Amino acid sequence: GWAYVLSLGVQTIIGKSGTDGILASLASIYNTPGLASALTIVQSAALLEIAHAAVGFVRSPVFITTLQVGSRIAALFAIVNSPLAGAQYGAGFMILSWSLVEVPRYAFYMAALITGDATKKTPYPLFWLRYSLFAVLYPTGIFGELTVFLTASKDEAFLNFLGENYVSVMYYFIMSFPVIYAPGALPMIFNMAGNRKKAMKKRFAKPPPPPRGLVFPIDPKRGDRGSTPVAKAIMAAAVGAVSPEKAEKVMKERNWRFGYVKHFVGMVEEQMSSEENALAVAVAGLKKAYEIFEFVSPDGTTTTSFGEAMAKKSGSKFYTGMVKGKAPLTKNVLEVPYKGKNLSGQALKDQVDKWVSYGTIEASAGEAIKNCVDKPGYLDLSDRYFVLLGAGSAMGPFLVLMALGANVVAIDLDRAGIWKRLISIAEKSSGSLTFPMKVEQSSCKSDDDLYAACGCNLFTETPRIRDWLVDLYPGKPFAVGSYAYLNGALHVQVSLAMDAICKDLSEKRKASLAYLCTPTDLHVITKEAHEASVEEFKTYSSKPYCI
Image 1: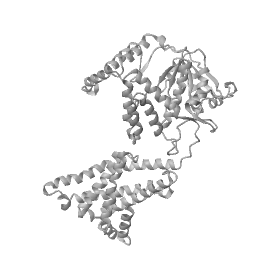
Image 2: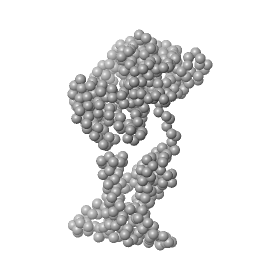
Image 3: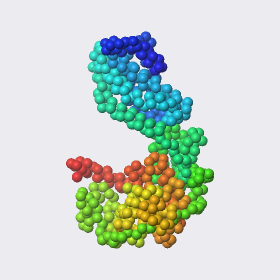
Image 4: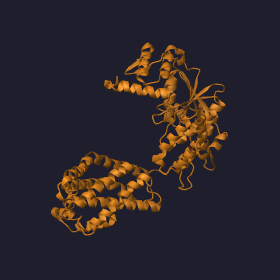
């Protein structure tokens, strides 16, 4: 359809020369025999794109798709019902711009369906056109659409579409679109530029390394290691432990990308109903995760479930490295930086009381902070052992623990830069740092050799890390914190790896567990806490600057 529209439009301007001749031919494009009806049909069919996005057939955002298609439908409505709008050169710009965008776009989609890979297997010329033409055609198309809107606003035939009594209605209706375009055009162009950058990056990205260690299972339908089937299976197993009806709804969800939130809320509602339900959901979900995720051996020859891999001892072991800090123990005075000052003693306690009164922190958190002020011994961690999974995390407690003289067991990637930072901090502290190594520490001839020999990989060496930690410092109580963070599906993998290590350490070493929460977590609070927050909001929101 779009190819037919384009061919008719191009035929109209072929052979024309001079500015006046070209502009005149552009002004006559819409009135080319057969073009108007074809344009109406193919552009109206684009309304299906909104429906496809809404029901999940495609992954496009519904709101953005509605805006893009809706603006074109408005321009089409104007040009169909305004003879003047269709007979000016801006209409030709609009029609040609739309056609030159859509012909390569649909050809690209067809090639993607045939090849099965829109990123790497589509012909590069077509790929380049799909992600590059917008730089010229979006501005020319927007220009053409604006001329159509503005011309229609002055056309008596258009303004009287609903009758003489509704001329002002039609005027303000059509003029609302140029107002919308003013703030919306540039973001749309920048969005396409961002999409182009991502597409080019994927097109020329190096192939991923072969799967090793903890990985998503292969989806038998798609042949890849997708996250959606796994997420649905685990969620269904978890909530199914207490509500088979909700589990069935999870498995029937077709638009998981945009529809998963309600299922998480439903699961939490079930967990909140009783302690038994909360534990049943957690146990069932984790059990399914251990069953469904796979663990590939280092040489790639053996694949088992993650649960089976963690049930066995690793065939190899880490060496143990240790660095003792050279600084004396601190004065055990709690100091909190706040507004350019370090608060301590009574000044800190007074500020804590203010935070509690504002509702910034809970009363129990305030009491804990004041206890540390009143009992300096709490700040001496020289006899405490902390295992940090993701020790180099920016949000982790590594710096605080080292400053308080703690014994930190650090788990982080085997990258020299990470260990240079961690070890350098440890050497200047009053604490100690223990870490896994690939060789004996004594064999390292320089600091650079030491940094290069440290570290491990939570994905590929999970059983080996677990075994090393279980045997480390027998009899010493561990507090194990999970602080590693990664983007997207990788965070699911690293979280499961950390859970497996925490599980065995809590069972075999009676370790206590700590977690780094994020604002994206769903936190369940007490009724009293909710009511207090509502009251505090009422009190302070009515004051200037909320103070």
